Amino acid sequence: MNPLSRLKNAFTRRSENEEAREQFKIFTGYCPSFTTYEGSVYEMAITRAAIDAFARHASKLKPEVIGPKNSANPRLKRYLALRPNPWQTASQFLYQLATMLMVHNNVIILPVEDFGYITGYQILDNQNFEVRAKNGRLYLAYELDNVRKAIEFERVGIMVRHQNGNPFFGESNGALRTTLQLLSIQDQGIIEGIKSGGTVRFAAKLTEVLKDDTVNKARERFVNDNLKMNNGGLVLYDNKFSDFRQLESKPVWIDDKQSELIKSNVYEYFGVSPGIIRNDYTEDEYNAFYEGLIEPFALQLGQVLTLMTFTDKELSFGNEIMFSANRLQYASNMTKLQISSAMLDRGVLSRNEVREIWQLPGIGPEGDEYVIRGEYISTDELGEENDNAIQTEG
Image (tube, rainbow, N blue to C red; front, top):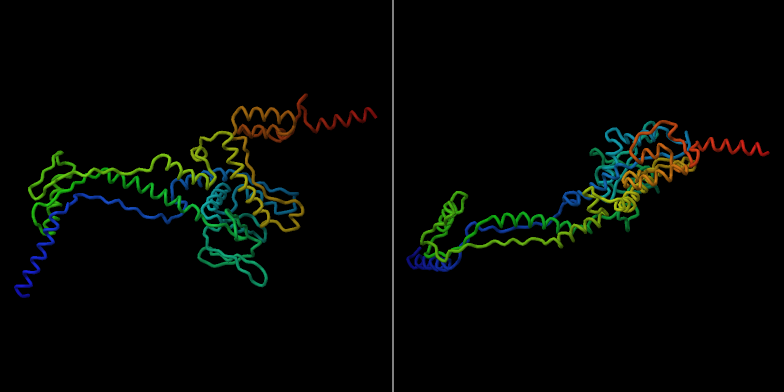
């Protein structure tokens, strides 16, 4: 390189350094960063709490197999009430079923069979399935244990939520994506605000021309000497810097109204109130929760299992699977007392059913008898007395 070129390059570097000398250098600068949320609805704390609240109450539903004796599989009632499949209890089965319905809006239920009889049910724990037609018949193609399988469509049960255009499956939870992103940004904002608020930052102007590596070394030395926990509270700096000042960090928080608005979107989407999530609900609040969410779930599940379990002939005999819950267990003691007294005296509830309301054990077969107000005798005995009275008059 000739002398003229070296002189030109040196002048260029000096000009760049002169320009840099008029710029502020920030020490321990912290720049908050935010990312978009692309996870499942089950990955956010508040959405998981809402789903868990629904699933916990749904897991307490009581299965009932209704129909005449010997008209269907007699073992089904026992298996369904205790262990629908070899690896899950009835409560665990219902909990997973309710959870997957909320997360995916689709749940596939496969039959567990023994010598051609349905003795239980299992949940397809993935969403890798589709409906196919062959020879004029519909089949459900799915993947289980890394093996592709197919089963007649009428032999499986499908529970759906948010069903719209598709006659088989429900829609996605895309309508909640904006709310999930707001929840994610809110959580990130709190974390970033704490980091930013706990960071001490300074800005200083260079008083002389320094090379980049020299500036970096000066910054590192300043940070090590003054911004550590054990610096004694006194900031010292040399004449390399001028116009030295501290930068105040003012993190921006989402106010309570905005935060509650985001949460209310979650509550409304899943149909669960804060009281249900926190387990401090009132009697009226639980009744609304049951009628709005638990009861539709129980109705759909009962119909799905009924149609996939019984043949047309068995259905004609009145065979049916139902799921029910004793809602009075969540009523106040005053309401329990009023209902117990009124329904027992009129022969609507038996003594065992009243004891169940109060979460007491039954008293044996005699507790299943119904009594009416008056002598409190069995309704069967009352019928016999009426017959005897008619015969006497005759």
